[in-house]
Image (cartoon, rainbow, N blue to C red; front, top):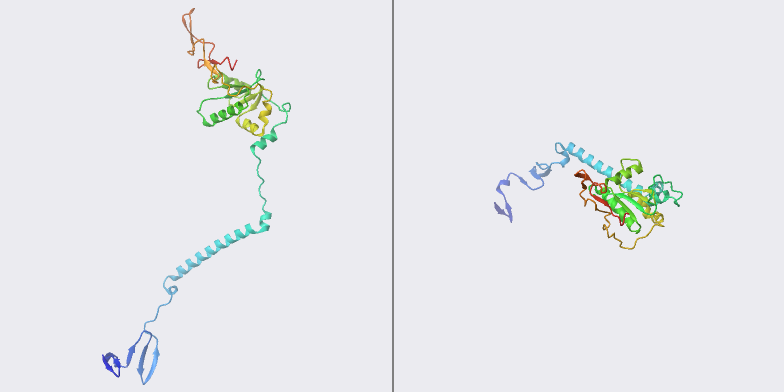
Length: 270
C-alpha cells in the first residue's frame, strides 16, 4: 500500500472499485452508481420455513389467554355489580341443634307423651350404659351423659350392662327391641332418650327442669361400700360363682351373684 498526496492507496483497487460496509460503488464512464449490496439481509422469523404452524400456535394461545382474562373480568364485575348482589338470595343460617331441640320440647311434664316407663324408679335417674371401651363412640357417649347427670348431684342408678348382662335383657324388654344403643336414660320412671337427647336438653335448660324435686347428694359424695363402682363381690361365694352342696356333695351355681360373681352394692343401690 503506497501513500499518495497524503492518502493511502491500495494496489488491489486500481480496477476502479472498492467496498464499504453498506454498498459497492463502481466507477465507470466517470459516473458513480449506487448498487444494492450483494448479500441481502434475511427477513423476520415469520418468513422462516414452518413459521405458519408457529404463528397458529401463538394466535391460539393468545386467544385462549384473552378468553380466560375476559371470563375473570366478567366474574369480578358480576360480583361487584350491585344488581347482581341484590339478585342473589343468600341462604338463611340453619338453626342449631339446641334450638331445634328446644322447639320440640314441651313446656310441662304433663304435655310430654312418654312411650316407655320404668316402674319403681320415680325418685331417681336410671342410666343404662357400658364401661367397656370396645367401641370408642359408645364409650364417649356413655361417659359424657354420666358426667352431665352427676353434675346435678342427683341420685343416679347406673346400670352397667357390661358388668351384668341381665340389664341388657331388661332394657330390651322395656324398649321392645333387641337392637338398642347406649346410653339410655330414664328420669322419674319416664323414658327420655339417648346421648344426643340428653346433650340437647342440657344445653337448652330442659334437663334441669326435669330433675327438679329429686333428692340432692352432698358435693363429692362417694359410696363407701363400692367406691361408686355399683358392684361388689358376692359374699355368699366370694365371687367364685360356685357353692358346695353338702347334701348332694357337689358344686352348685351361686344363686345370688351374676355371671361375673358380683352383686349390686347394698348401700348405694339398695
